[in-house]
Image (cartoon, rainbow over all chains, first blue to last red; front, side, top):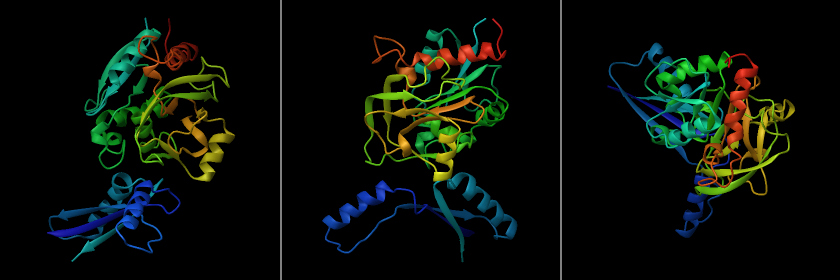
Length: 81
Length: 230
């Protein structure tokens, strides 16, 4: 069983009001010096068998078409050992 | 024969009944379409209603985009079929790439529900031809993720080609870039709008009957373009 992790985050120029709300809470909890908070999503795919180039290409296609919206988000795909 | 206007129901759609009712009041025949049925049942136009398709999981409209009925709708829209996406329907149209840009979380984070004043900016689309350019209308608005975003190049293109169909007046309720409430594709058959014209079709229940104009427009355009003969 292989694990593939897809991280999705808003593009830097897209406003992240959720991250901003979290940052407000951090200040109230006494964590000083936080200049910015950006909230993202992580998908952990558990996949039967080995990950070959074809499977990785499929996962990248899904990451781009479903898991992220390229208009507002960037994604990264990494295979966990 | 009245033009047949399909209204799609996804799991989690809320406003399909109101959209069907608006179609009927405007003089069309409302036809229910089901998300899992890859068949448009020979409708002449389609409304994607508001709500929370697939629970808004992942991103609003992201999963609905891959519903069996949507593949047919994307093909038909590219072939000129008039399609109106309201609220969640607008989000689905953006996720389907039938319209540019995306709808994001309201900048103030709150769900907003109010009667919203809009200015109609384009009356050449299939869904806005019964309005005057510059006409001010009031229809309900209710969304949590209604902030319209696109990069500056796309925004300039939309403005330059007159594809902003309506703009928020007096108050920008969700942080939408350039106060954009609705847009159309280049051909003018696909329109997305965040506020809800289908909730403003009867004096008893709506703030106005201004919303009827969207549904009257498509009936007119279907006849004008020869897609329906009466």
